[in-house]
Length: 119
Length: 107
Image (cartoon, rainbow over all chains, first blue to last red; front, side):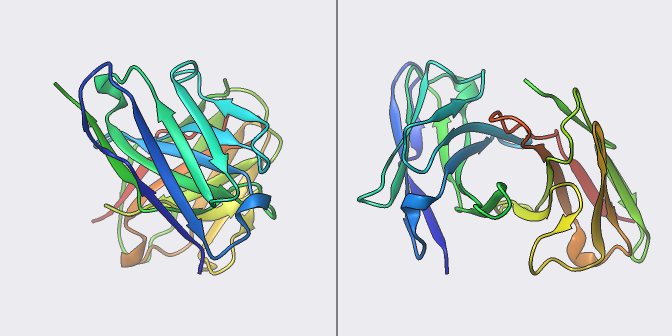
């Protein structure tokens, strides 16, 4: 059974940095594009970033470009999201999601990790 | 970026009713639309891809239609388990924007 487990969330002060991780298992991680999606409390889903299967191509939402960096380590089956200069409006549950090869949609999601930006 | 606008924001229907949710794209996106269901406290679940293709394991009461800029998600007969928020998402571009969501409740 495909598993995606996010970690690294917590309470962080504005202006600080944070790195989220997503550990993947039970599928061939290196052949799948991967994605981050966030959801602010009580709000809708916001696509944040995507990375190609080999890690060479990265794509970002305008709202995070320049502060967020998506990366992956295919030898460790792990996806990352580096968040710099955290702002209160970055407060959200961050989900990692697998990009389906068959449909190009997000077919498996993790349970999410909560990031709270507060002083 | 391509914007996705859903309507209505909230929908209240009786069990057994047919439910229709609309999604409009700010520019033409062919059939590159997906629909997701999200229940409170849970991760989203893929229902429909390429506008009208049913994801494996999803009940046949769910269906999707549309192309270009106008898309629709239908639930033929609302069930208690369908109470959730539904999101459309475009994947015509690498920027995978979501609609703002439609919350479906029962009367």
